[in-house]
Length: 150
Ligand code: FES
Image (cartoon, helix red, strand yellow):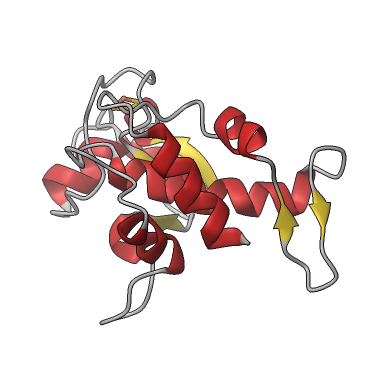
């Protein structure tokens, strides 16, 4: 593999993990979002060779064998998609976003007694603004994320 291969191309073309989508291929749409050590990254902007020791989670790695991740279930329940092309990136980004919320947003998010993070719809929209949906399914996407973490 060429050292200039992006992480996205390595996942899709070399590992046959095609859940991460190529929308713009230059960091503008979020369709390629993966988690690297739990943090959201646009895989099209990162070189595969930079991640030899990193834990990379794609949409294929969420949930458990035979069981969808709760965020996937919530997107299904709320019809958080139309054409579906951006959906893997939206879901991976939402999972990463909630992890970031728990770690880094004491001024933006309040935590309930059972440790869940409370986010307003506006906060969800702001924190998901790196993931575009050309079908504009945003209201349902926000509903799905709110329900998945509530
Ligand atoms: Fe990576 Fe659009 S394909 S941000």
